[in-house]
Image (cartoon, rainbow over the protein chains, first blue to last red):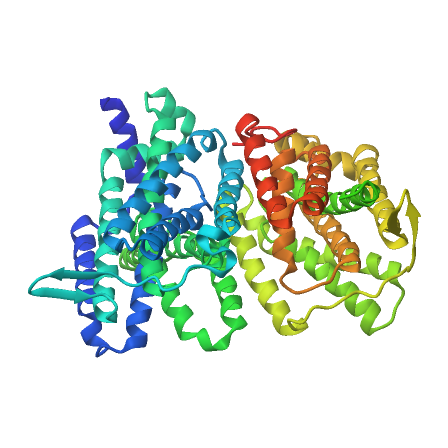
Length: 339
Length: 289
């Protein structure tokens, strides 16, 4: 076991972030403090709060997809699992009147069960085949939901998904209020990112990276690769389902089109632009790209073209993404000093 | 459904399947040689169709010359894209080629909406009328298109088997290092195969655009179909792409006629999933790491 930890640690260090951990912690704390102060900073402007909530969704999605990537897999089933969470919670509310506090955990459990069931055969495939198989899983989930239109409303979708309320006698919060929903989204997103950070920081995270580096070698030093892949994939899908439920109750309307392949594609774009080796990557990528996206909303198709250009430019000119910028600056400074 | 519809259904399935196979063969050729996933392959199909639209409907030039011109233009475009973008990510994780392909989809399909407009267009037909076979109506257009796509597949097969360049392409797909040692210029083979694959997609776009209609966003649907076929058949395998294409074409035609279009799509995904569960590398594929 010691040997295993040693190699995995060495690999994790090789991939490790450039900044020392203490500095990293300050950056995270500053980011979290800023998100808490954000509504006051934008003087409770409704549109800017909406941008903040969208960012929280995108961060949670990109971070959970990144957890799958840390196993060396690219999964496009993500939007599908998001749909499972969203539809479970939405239908429980509209058909049975159960609030989101019950619907969201049930959606997460359902998505988790589906993820285990699907990943048992899915994990037999590797690399490119896994990517394509996960893609077809996402499409099947979306189209199956659309097909059972008696229950799910088909392509027309589900309407009137009310936001939840808290009623504890003296304390009453109605999440139809945007500020309240902003804090709900931020807190859940922060919990998801923290969980992923902790998983990645633990022994499990090292095992994930060792699988992604060399699956065969990992298996030979006694790691149960299949089990870790299934568990990692399931956890990420549960997070996607939670995000989906949160999304449904915010938009108050969902249709199968909301969970198109584009959702997964954009999450992948966020990861690639942000960075691949730490959870900071998807967070930074999702925040910066969502901000760009919202500022350019008025330009229509040009916005999508710009996304394409950014993506290709990142891959060719800044491999490793935005997260490598501090390291690059530091190296440049050090290089100047020595010369 | 009556028995009259059966021949029509089969011919429709076959012609659809052959055109799907053309797109998928292009994709599989590119994968075989470079080991990258060209996610933006469908955009070549869209651009090919739009080139033919401008050629025939706007400039009034002959149809078949336009197909050839479209194929050559897209061949050059594919070769340029390979040299400028895809060569840089050759040999790296599939994530990077995926990212570049995704970027191309964003650029081409949105750029297409700006330049070509979002209205549905049709390429002028080159033949009208048709014949009745066993009570089913077959248009001359569909028959000619099926024959053309079938002969293209055969032609490509002969090209890969008999010519020097074709053999070099197969050698590089088999083992890049050894073929480089034998004096094959692998980098040159990369752009030749990439251009050829893109040109095949462009021809399929021209033919499909003639039968159906064209919009700037049609490329992504073609990508989906091509990927489904390639998964079924196995990456890098040309017979696999042909068989996969015909299976998918038949599902599309038969299930859509007999049951519904929604079920046809769900069913084709389920078929793919089952194939992957029992043969994780597709019907004719190998395990790529």
